[in-house]
Image 1 (tube, rainbow, N blue to C red):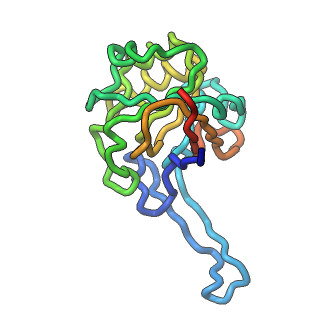
Image 2: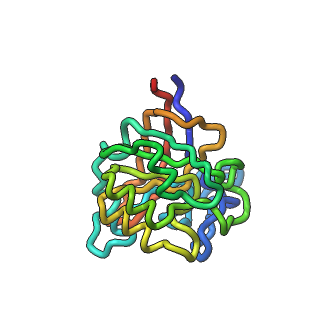
Length: 211
């Protein structure tokens, strides 16, 4: 099966979390202006677009992203489609028989459209705090979601992130799952290796596996 890209492109039109710096891409050298090579300069947040969160993001002494075990973000993953149009709740998670060590990616109403170039959506589907604690109790390895945060905006940012990160669950945010079916996949998601980072942009790709 072919690999499918489920990450968004970093572009100056990319939506960012309110308060984060907008994406800036500037040509320092331009062959159209007579330079021998093209050279770009980027100004972005570590949590731009499709990215991963390290424990250090919300845990003071937590691991930084450059210390992530590579087998966390490479291997079998399961995409679960969430029916609730507002939040990811424990009652719905209980129907999916989530097991220890799984990599779980949530496809929600957020993926109805390519959200990356649209204005910031304040009511995006996110994890309820109790749902995050449920996943921590299940001891999954990785949690991904199809918007810029696993938590709601101005709602439960600290509680959700700490519930996951303190349990050793690494986080992928900003996935683009439009048109992707729920089911079993092989995942590869490698964040940029930035020393002592709390997060970093990543390229996430999947390919379908047998059920």
